[in-house]
Amino acid sequence: MMHPGSSEMMQPNMDLTPIKELLLKTCGFFFENSREATLASGVMQRMSLRGVDSAVLYHSVLTSDQDELRRLIELLTVNETYFFREQDHLKLLVDKIVPDILSEPGKSTVRIVSAGCSTGEEPYSLAIMLRERFGEESSRLFHIIGTDIDSAVIAKAKQGVYGKGSFRGMDESIRDRYFRPCGPGCYQLGDIRHHVKFDVANLKEAMYPTGMRQPDIILYRNVSIYFPTQVQREIFGRLSALLNDGGYLFVGATETIYHNIGLLTLVNQDSVFYYRKMPGVIIEDRRTTKREIGEGEQTKPVSRRTAVSVIPAGKVPSGTRPAVIGTAELQSPASAGDVDVKKLFDEALELAISRRLDEALAVLDTILKKDKTFTKAHSLKASIFMSESRFEEARTVCNSILSRDPLCLEAYLMLGIMARHAGNDADAQRRFREALYLKSSCWLAHFYVAEILFGQGDKNRAGNGYETALRVLENPPEHRREFFPLSFNAEQFMAICRHKLSLLKNGLYDGF
Image 1 (cartoon, rainbow, N blue to C red):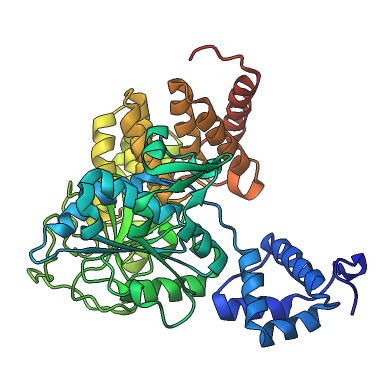
Image 2 (cartoon, one colour; image 1 turned 180 degrees about the vertical axis):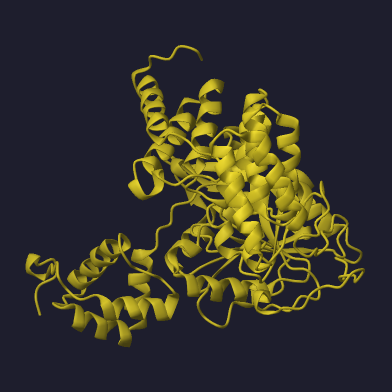
């Protein structure tokens, strides 16, 4: 064997396939493309420390030494988190969802799980917000547990000691109220630390710690990015099964759409998306079932005061909030096999492109008489109304789209653009944020949010938005995509982003 740290041990072409397969099997971690470099670096570091001279030998060590496997997993886990991350989730929980749960007859304790909690900032954030809202009673009312696969970060979470990076989302007055200095730049959480329990849990394993059982709320945010699709589905299924009937499951803002696989009902409340386990629903992929709910047939009611009924797709009443996003995808005319409707739509599209807008609208009305659920026809109609400054009619159509298909990205974008045009930046931001929940790489939403922040004088966040929009636009496969039926000159938007970033960088914009 070679000496630890020997440069000869660095093998740029070593075969990592067996190690990747072992990690996928044991903890669900997926290392392909850009993440393979992270794996190679971690493996070589552990090989050097163990004095192992080949990946084949190191694979043998991993299969026979559970402690070494744990150390590699800990090395590969990215524990980037901070207090009050994605605070809109937490505010909705504390201000509306938790009071609704507590209002249920006989309900005395709310059980909350933070799955993949890293060093504990997430469950502690919730504990602090609950203390602020419910006072000393919070220790009795709430049972909070944080879990993570990495035993080292769980140990740090129990200590409750944090550096300045963890406080970038926290007001200093909150920090000073709940933490005490314990060293240069470090603070330790006070007595509220004892109101959160922690445990090590591998979400890929069949058995979870006892403390995770029957929760009312699960926070599973910014964790599934490590997993391939099949493992994502597997873990989401297990977490769904854990939930009490009527329970809530939150994923990260950029992960929302990837978990809409029919196991839970996706809900949009106050522009925040979450999943809900409706009572009586068997946890399985409901996309595989074909049963239709008959006219007048009632679904089992949810026993929460602000309950959301399970409503079949296409039967959501307009204006209902929170909006239930059905598990069945809305079908285009292909489902009806109506070739005439397809031809009519192509005709309407050509008329719209030729600016024969009245004729296009007439054809679209004919289409929608045949098939009310044809989302693209509704979208094109709204776009035509927008182009003619018939904004009220366009808004009505967009809201109608969302009542049938709350996953329609384009409807949110059009509503955001119209709100921006009307000078209602708060509503515009809300709509663009909803678009980003559905598609985190939606450059148009990033751009408009950056424009609003730029006008408000929020330089840092505006710059981040412009950079994100520009990064997506500079990716050739992405910038050619259009948000049907909206069409934009990508080069023009790239130029605007670069110009605004230049102003921010050089401090030339004095409008703040």
